[in-house]
Image (cartoon, rainbow, N blue to C red):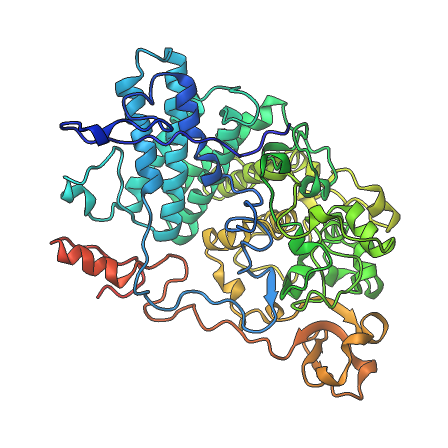
Length: 602
């Protein structure tokens, strides 16, 4: 049976001191604080509950929070039919961070020290302290990315300690210094191997490369603190080096298989995956949301579609008209192979946001069965019955984290990037095998990236070097519709890319030749609703008589821009405000809670 994140958790009941009455008997189905720390196996069961807290994968059942495709729809990759998703524009009445996980982890760390020193070997104790500190660092990293300054707790806090419960926000840098120490400890002490699908040093290293790169670039671009940026970027390189030098991982599977396989156990690109098993009652719904039978309002923006590199290694603006043609058939043959693996091969009315249907998470055999053979949908790809495994941490991410961190360090006085750095990261990813179905459609591998001949992209942000631009492009193609895009834009301080007034390609979708490909859309009901945009931005709205002119990037006229969120007084789209009621509650207890940076402090 596949290992799934269906864990029988041991919930420790923390019993206060004092006289014990008959009704205070320890429950028979749970451990108490006296009995729960008596073996390494019980400690493992306690720690296992964090797996589903941090490693969402494809979610569970219809719960898709933190899952790709539907859990992260607010970015410059997604257009929505109707109103585009907005950033928070005012302080909410209620809302604040949760410290439940932090408290639970601090209890675990305390009990390892106070109750298990005579039970665990020194190596085992160091390992479990490392696991706990890794999870604590992970959660604090999430908190500071959302709120900036947050209260820091390194121990269990009790109801009898109001000064601790209502402590002021700890400066972000102080919090992240503690995170840095936790991550370094975990890298040095977590076991290299603790069993299949359990946190080990390689898994820690992969996540450290992500968390440290994130903090390093936040410091460089948002806080303008190069010294702190260098500290975390060097940690990102160090962590990624551990995985790269191990020889345990490789890029050996075609792109689509990574997201549609029922068993990722032997996949050398998956440093960590989430297994799904219907026999254990663990399934998901992500494949169903892209099964070519469901109607969806979300689809790829024209901006994302235009960002894909040509398989020659160049950009579409510099290609001949025949190559740059955005007809879907031509794009499949001329763009990076990940384009074909991400989208259905024909425009589809079911994707009402873009008319390009996202099939990255749907197996090719299901696509063939339902669209070519015209057979029924397998039940497992309906509702929340999906059982495909989810890649949680991929080797491709570690490679790109390593390269980006090194490239950023080079701008801070570090060693310059050389061609071999590109070869063992971007070019290794581009050499990923192609599926036979893709080859049959004319898909070819993308040419290697040459440091001496980087693409001359006229659409490049002039504030970003040509090298960093290509590294960021590679991330965008590699992680399309996963979990990273909005977080990447924030850490680069580039939320301006999501401003509809600055980027007019955010409100339109795929290129469609309506008379040839989707004549069913040219109906009386769609007069005045369906429009197309040319490459120069000229808009043509269907009027019932101009069908022949309806060729271009599809746009629905009901689409509305995001409300302004940049350079607005008392709005900071990079950090999350806390609620008024929480601030008032602190005041009622005689304490002061500051509002998040960039939001009104009253």
